[in-house]
Image (cartoon, rainbow, N blue to C red; front, side, top):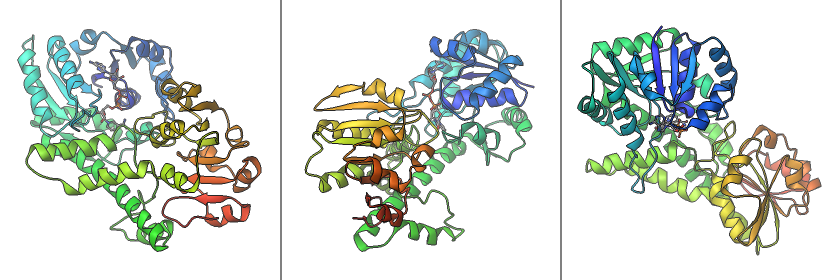
Length: 441
Ligand code: NAD
């Protein structure tokens, strides 16, 4: 059993902390947000992740996890401190390391015994070296402290499962001492461990994320071409998927990737390359394709309709993907302002993301248009002139083709997630536009 502190209780830090407790370690999660800490202490998760709240309650009751803003108390005698704070994008695309620097300084001023500091946040190659130097520069007590890299590969929406059943754990260390501590912490997980040096570990994270982003943008690029030449992207993806060198995952065309990771990690790696005098052209293309793809539905609908002014527009899905309440870089955030500017009256449904969206776009009049958040799909569709599908929530996928015909004033659907068979929409009498496939009239 190790005494572990985790800095930052976002998707990465909280899930890591809870899973460490679940396998038997003694964990203290630290956050600067006092409201968040109080919520967690009462057994409530500040983020939506399947199974997270149950594990929080179970491990809190068992005395294996606690939450605090008192970083000094948490870091003082920890065997290992995991850093899971944000590394958001800066205007030039580079990662903002100020949160990491603050934690590094707090650690240096707090630790009273030998301690391994583990950077879980996604950081540019070479950052771990700097964090180690920074901690040594500000160290108050005479203790051994080293920094290791342990990038996180969880996907939001399945974060707990991804952590407990990870395909691999990557650790980057510069000493046997550090490697042994990390190996010991992860031993109870019984998962494959890839142990490399720190810089390689940092690079594995970016290279993995950017490869997945590239795969998505590649399929979206091919999808756009499919529309022009009369091929069907879903058939094309099916044919590709049998090739084991390609694999069957991440072949779905759609309205681009969002979330807190792929958009910023593509830009960050491009920036790292630029800093080193290298132009990473594949990643540049990934970013460009994705930017255009985000507003594809709006552009398609604008060609089809004379105006959005005064139209009732049903929006199904607001989050960047199903299973999360996270709106960062969601396609809805790109399209909805455009629709509002054009005077659309939006009726939006999202099973978990509506509250977060309403903070950005409060219910009521907005610009020339208006927005209302509804609690079910039927309410969104009733009397609508046009429907946009941005997120493939189960509740949205469950909507039968006939329902669009029955409920909408004009059954005109723009689907950014290719949920439906074109034939089913045609049979139901719905005009259906999707991505990389022919439109049904
Ligand atoms: P997040 O923004 O959800 O959470 C960060 C948390 O850190 C916040 O609660 C904030 O209050 C807290 N914080 C800030 N400064 C602090 C300090 N000094 N001490 C303690 N807490 C502090 O971030 P996230 O989505 O969990 O991402 C964290 C990192 O992990 C990023 O580098 C990200 O790229 C990476 N990552 C994220 C995911 C993902 O799916 N979200 C997956 C893999 C890697």
